[in-house]
Image (cartoon, rainbow, N blue to C red; front, top):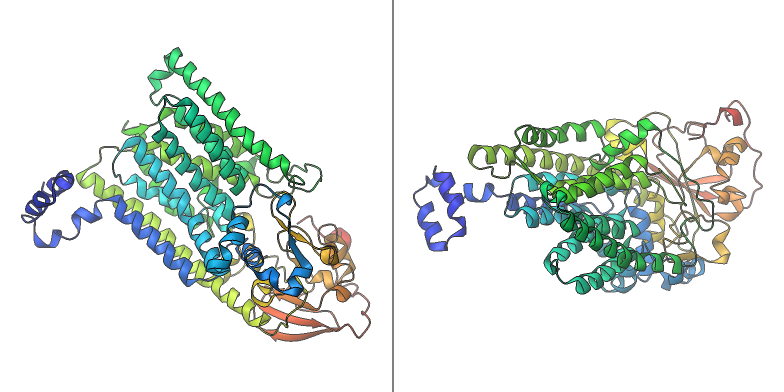
Length: 578
């Protein structure tokens, strides 16, 4: 009973709160009022993320090293003569997906590229769940334990994939949707102008963020209560406002996307790649998966059970209008292509939108208090912080690999061109190296060689320079030995014609690689390559070996030896699509 008194009187004057608390046992004074509020756990989570981002310079976030290299160049790295001969900035090349680039260009020189990159990573982690929490609180009022559960969605596949602009855009979409609510329902002209500005800003950051904002706005325009959907007048007014929001919102999106020099994919065919039915279903797990799907699913079970139990007891508050938007996003999660127009993992983006919007739209056990409130807090906080601890362990593992790359490239002289390759291992890595992969067996290490750009001022052919997505361009001098979005190739491509020919369509820089590159950087070197084991071509001199990474100098004074034939090299028929 004393606990309830403390909770009830938290909103009264400070003198009365102190007087009420003085009657409680001494052991309860500093804890119960604080630990019973979700805000405490939200603040603790934000602090934990800040500590992780501060400790680990380059965590195992797939695209992060590549973003860091581009931030370095835009923040002043292009002042170096060698790098300016390789790269240039053309803002007409992209009008969307450039949030990072704009901040790097304007803010990077002031605070430094590394501080900016870490700050952006921090925002990419915390903004999406914080935005959903704020919208949940605006819709249902007051502090609630379920808001702790929303933090679980911070560690999604899109975050581990390094979709920094996308992640930040999701958080901004929630904040802008909140401002929609603040503007009110009667100021139609003002909110229309506001939505046009919001979509313009969000499209600059990421076009999917602008779309997400419009879907949220549509859901918030629809009636909150199910019974109001039978009211034709209300439903018609909401539909009219949704159509108007779509028109004023799509205008800046279309204008920005089509004002760039080219669309994503750089004039290529749409090249849609679809998920199989099984992958389409498993795709939804991307919203709750980081490095270990079984672990993440197990930790998510208590949160799922809370929702199921609340629904079975009919103790769940919902915003029906927003749930319609959630249903729309769920359908897109199942139907979206995996790849299209030179953009990968499109289907991963809709499940996290679905769960974040869904979490904002519901509140299980809305009037939970006493023992029920303590149970909800214990279950949600345990799941969230156990998962955060697991991420910290994975980041510690990844730090060892980053250190190895840094040691390997320490001997790299300035003005060098580096060819990145990897030992591609056919079997899953050991648990101690679990941070090297994440959802669907994708690796997190493919962009680590781009650290040679941000830390040694070297040219690497796989830096992000895609038309329609980045303003960074490769100069004519280096264009033939670069790709706008690249992956690691097997060391077997340096030895075997069959492997090299398989890679050439998307890694054309492999042709005459001895004449084009000064050094070869091998990652995942502590595992044998699936094709050639640990064998390296003749004419390479090992400069440094740090276990996971090794650096070789290319000897250009001797002619290239003939390619190794069978049995070491696989036949073309033996090479699979992967």
